[in-house]
Amino acid sequence: MANWNYPLYDVRRIATLNELIDRRAAESAGNAAFAWTRSGQRVEKSYGELKQEVMALGKALGEMGANGTKVVIFGENSYYWLLSFFAVTYTANVAVPVDKELPVEDIVWMVKNSGCTHMITSEQYCDIAETVCRETGLRMINMKDIPRLVFERKEASGSDTEAVRQPDVSEDTLAAIIYTSGTTGMSKGVMLSHGNLALDACSACRNYRLHGDTMLLLPLHHSFGLVAGVLMTLVYGYTVYINTSLKAISRDFPVAKPQNLFLVPLFVEMFYRNIWNTAEKSGKAGMLRNMVKVSNCLLKCGIDLRRKLFRSVIDGFGGNLDTIVSGGAPLSEKYIKGFRELGINLLCGYGITECSPVVSVNRNQFYKDGSVGPALDECTVRIDAENENGMGEVCVKGPIVMQGYYGMQEATDEAVVDGWFHTGDIGYLDQDGFIYITGRKKNLIILSNGENVSPEELEGMFSGIPLVKEIVVYEDGHRIIAEVYPDKQYAEEKKVMSIKEELEKKVAEINRGLPKFKQISAVRVRDAEFEKTATKKIKRSSVGGNK
Image (cartoon, rainbow, N blue to C red; front, side, top):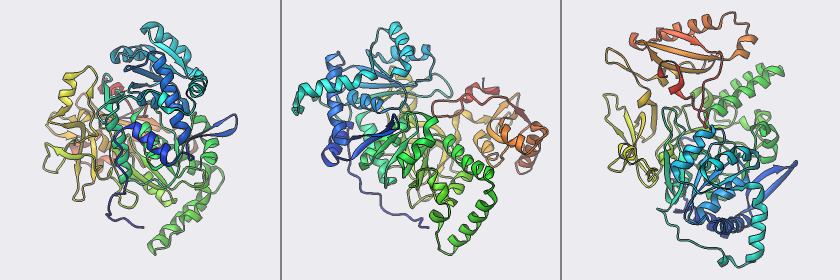
């Protein structure tokens, strides 16, 4: 297996989302940009059709008064969600994607905070949208009407593309306000320009090369889903297959046949567990383990038969999957190694909404497990206030850094100092420029003796324990506590008599390898999953001693 430093992939710089749409329509007009399943049939939209429909919907929005304004986009993942986003940004309006799972009062706050005038909503969430619009005075547009609006404007314009208003859009033009998930406090509206998004997508593609289509599983209202799941695929001119419901994943894989998946750790872990649960239920788990051992021995001799030996596993993902890129939260090396043994390369990256969001990603043939890869070429990363081990706060500078928090100048000035965005993440750089993230600055446990403990480091030690489904480590009353949501199905199958006692045994084993100040004092078992953000990160502010 090759793992060596080599030049970045040759990807032309694209400075605006408009340029991305225009270039793909000119160079890949007949290729499918998006695909999805409707009434049991695969439906496709080509790059040529995408540009025509973006311009037609943009014209309709202008006629409805959306000129130089902000537009909420609200609903489940769909082609019409994406069409709305590109139509809004193409016409120099500002898209404000909003999480469909938020309480109405939070949505109302975001609408008022951002100063939106229009709301494009899916039929499925129309009732919530109507409530928001009544409280805020927004003009509502239902996505079910978009096909008619597009058809009417295309008919009126014919082939005269100049009939559609072509506003000036530059690298610095504001494209979107994306609200942070708020894991530790109130959400902030992150202002991302056309250049922020387009340059980040292109730069990420220079680190990581796509060789085929992608299946979109992450929510589009979050920057990782939008940039990694969509824009990067468009940069290369491949097809994004849109999964419109997580319940339809198993149906969609054989239709989409993706070669790439962009996931958060929750999905990675779920897929990995499903592989082994399926093997267990079919009585083939032992055989699969033996095949992994044989394959690993062959790899040491330079013989790679993984794609043949584990064909049934790969077929479960549609048959073409060769790479998963994971981001959004830390991922245990257990899953990286596990997928790679089965013939699917798993690469970790790092990002944050304020950096559009991708900051770094491991490369196809140059990666280090445990790291989040080297920084993109459109940014510079440094470690601020390093300690004796070279660890400190990760800071980022470059054209991928946000324009600021909307309406929050004080918060912007605190986060961006002399052009450097302070991420709040603690990490270090190795000699090859690979970034390692060890925890969050805000999460650090400061003990009474002055010692600092990273809860993420301790949580990572539980990743190989099957009984632990989710865990959060925190301080409470000067003690380090591990709060666990157990895997109850595993406990039943293995006939675990007392989950708490079993966990306490595991904690005692882990404590033996830790200095006294890092040792966990108590285990708390919870009945329900932890509350999570849109990208399935646990909201630490709602847990135990963090409340």
